[in-house]
Length: 242
Length: 241
Image (cartoon, rainbow over all chains, first blue to last red; front, side, top):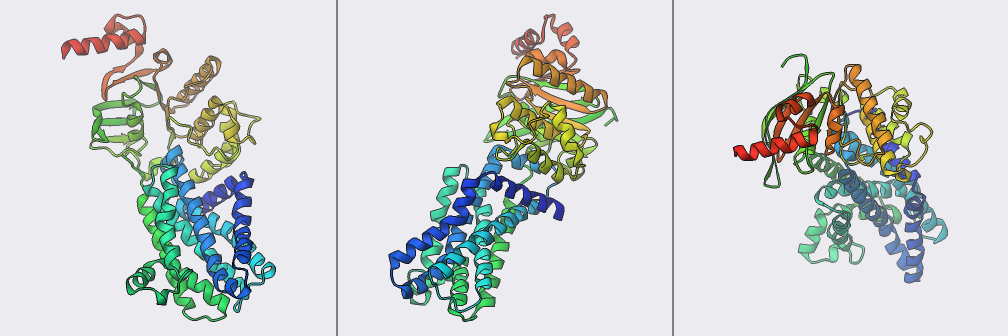
């Protein structure tokens, strides 16, 4: 592993984004647009206070999962990954380069969505807003790591996009957004205990509520899950292929 | 292995998707020469090339490059490779692409401009790769393979789709590199490129039919050019079989 090569990869990914203004605009602004929409669908501030924080965790997770799956699939398909594998680039340089670039992008995305939600839509945040941004960015990193890993199993962009309902939606259903996790049947609650998004959402909700109950544990679990997914992603990156 | 060989292939077999793509290849690619890897599409050229640059899983045999097993870490800055597709980032400019690959290889940043000029793309540094013509795009990919003065440069069909003038210029470049001691392995499905190579490897259906100079091919088959020489070899093999 090399810091210079990891950074070169991150800079390259950011340059690619830089040339794609439309994607940047969608990445940075669209979660905020959805939040505004949700605020008026729910109509009452109390209901928004209950649902809003969870979505601050879910949006960046979902979007980064999708973006990462498609981008890494493109690397495999266009031969750029194969070419990099003939060069002195470590597998972790590649993965961490992506994680760094998308982590920074997520920070921007989450910063905007938190600003709009808190200042514009009046979401009550009991805890630190800065911490909320950091935790939501960590959720995005989890999405990136899972996207890097699952893209190894997709043969086309079409399949990669289909992993969204497969990997992301069950986690969203069971994370406590619709029904509190404690109120689920024991089987579903057990499943939700395994999904990392549950802890990501719990952490965001805790900060919004101004409690730091389980916060350290939750963040530890999210970070560990992201690292595990990156590690599994490294295993799926092979220098020699069939 | 003697010092004159850049790559040594022994009993190489590769199976892909249940089909044997390479059925026992033995060959020595000599240093400081241009070896042309010729054969129809589907003959296994790309698979052999991928085995030499160390990204192809093989089922038997060995590939030794510059004294090391193919794909060894020490080779990663000594072997330049351009695959059949232009493996560059379409959403980056010409210079950004090369800067990234140069950074990954750990090359001097001055290499970027040198290779851009070598492939005749000076003046297009800031253009996005996606806005280039097919021929220009394949030259960006070629430029990546030329970064950092590798000792072995492996190019899979680098001249496909180029106009004849450009093709001639690239072959001149390859000869200049060989003159500096670089070994080149260049594949093509166009038999007329045979006369530009120092040595030929003729591949068909995963087997090496011939490996020597063009002059020897013509002598052996009594034909006037590489294309007819190839057909004659295939004919003889089928009679023998």
